[in-house]
Image (cartoon, rainbow, N blue to C red; front, top):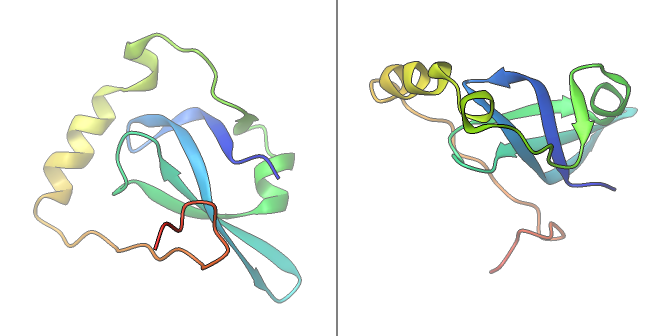
Length: 99
């Protein structure tokens, strides 16, 4: 499975993500996506939504800095300083598990 993805729209101001984990829930594969630049920006998406959506492209698309790190990122960080950021957990079989 491809682990490097670019969001067509900024997510909390960022666009480049890595799939760090997959879990099976019922009949779906759930992917944990984490921003390449900020681990605090992460989301869960079904694998089908990831590959069939017009919202994502496989690989990292070379974008100008202003399009890959938007003003939304600064806004997100100023809000999240006041809130608890959800921790992420990596499965033992994840390529990102280094323990």
